[in-house]
Amino acid sequence: MGRVTSGRASGVKFCQINMRTTILDDPLRRSLWCLACVKQILFKIGDDWFFLFALGVITALISFTMDFIVAKMLNAHRWLYQELGDNMLLKYLSWTVYPTAMTAFSTGFAQSVSPQSAGSGIPELKTILTGVVLEEYLTVKNMGAKIVGMTCTLAAGSPIFLGKVGPFVHLSSMIATYLGRIRASVTKAYENKSKQYEMLVAAAAVGVASCFGAPISGVLFSVEVMSSHFAVRNYWRGFFAATCGAFVFRLLAVFNSEQETILALFKTSFKIDFPFDLPEMVCLASFPLGILLGTPSKLNCLGIEFLSPDTQSQKFIHLKLSSIFFNFLFLQLTMKELLTSFFDNRTWIVLSKNASLPRPPSVDPNNLWIEWWDPTITIYGTLLVFIVMKFWMLILATTMPMPAGYFMPVFIYGEYFYASYNEKSTKMTPFIG
Image 1: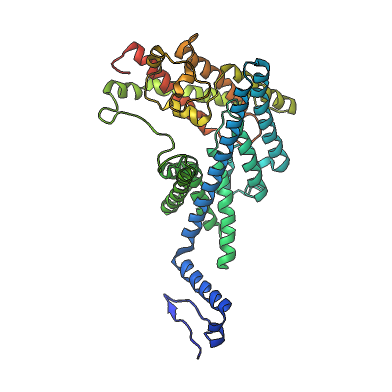
Image 2: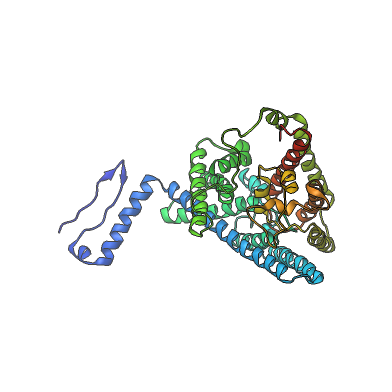
């Protein structure tokens, strides 16, 4: 059989392989020839989209695996606490030693393996996008330290109420960096700064989408993070990668029997026929409510600057305070359960007055409001104690040099003030609540 060569497609030489009878008879060579043709076709269509798809899938897999491990560890800690019975000393030790050990391991592991893994990583990502070269911030060692440290931070549970949004943006950026290097080696092309920048912009959207399953929010977050550095052509790249990550993240929950179908991570329960009342919307849009929400955030920043630890002894004191004092709140809710309870549109003060059932021995996912009810101090007292304790303890937890996210606590503040507003408005003006 003579030599057969493929023609040019759009000016690009596509496939030129010697098709002799010996090649056609050899299965291995025939397979390699088919793979070479498929590779040329796929990369001619657009290699960017395949690597963006891989970026979303890999980040979603890591996010779901981390959530799965953290949930198992928190359930084991809660089971141990309940199995100790009425021995208050052992229950106190079990509730304090575990988060202290998790936080200490997260801090020690991050500082010994890669000190650059501490914090959220978003400020460093902004700096990298401006053109400044930061060593060790996008390496495999830093990524491993970020994953292990972040898992231990989230597994600490109630005493350390920190999120994972910021670290996952950083983690997704590290994955995007190495996918870009793989792409350059496969296509035999030079990895320029423009391609690396496009992957990092998409990684910011994927990081948020893999945490909440919300691709649109991820794209908006990437625009906010990149600000003036965001190019219009990156909208579709970021949205495609974020959609892939969000879809895989919620699909894994269905495969794990956590949900029957793909649903929102945090669901609301507003009435379809009459979700909002006009006076309620006026009060929510009021200027004093914005001041009320912005004040604690500013005070939190000032407190972090004032209490930033400079010595190892200060760090140890911060760790002990963050893990011990919070246990007097007897609040066993995780971060997800806490947000779910705040999204409840029922009025807790009305439910507490009609409550006749005893407190369940474990947390009931369908009645999380019971965890906020105490007959001695009522719902209002519990909410007040929660915000006072959480405010200063969050400041102490933030000063720890470990991988952690700081966006979720801000969401907690907002949901808390809405819940407090809902309870007070129901008492003062029942027609609004």
